Length: 73
Image (cartoon, rainbow, N blue to C red; front, side, top):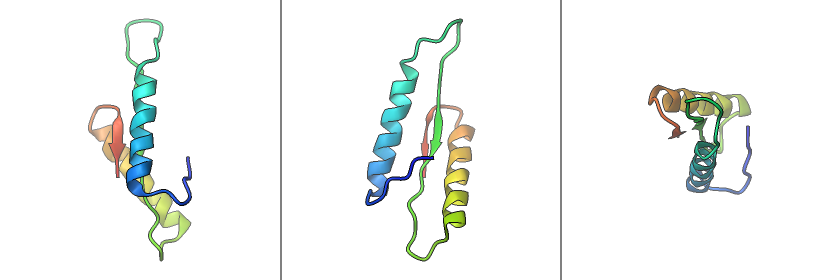
C-alpha cells in the first residue's frame, strides 16, 4: 500500500502508471514478462479507512481482470 497524503486521484494514477512502466522494463529470466496491476482510490471525506481499502482492493481486481498491467480507479 502506498498512501499519498495531499495528492489528487490524477496524481496517484500517474504515479501508478509510472510504476507499472518501470516494472515492465525488468528483464526476467526465462521467456515471460513481468507485469503489475494496481488499484488506486481517493478517500472521500466521510469514508472510513476500511471502506477506502475496500474500494482500492476492488480497483485492483478490476485492473487484474483487464488482463494487463494497469491501474483501475
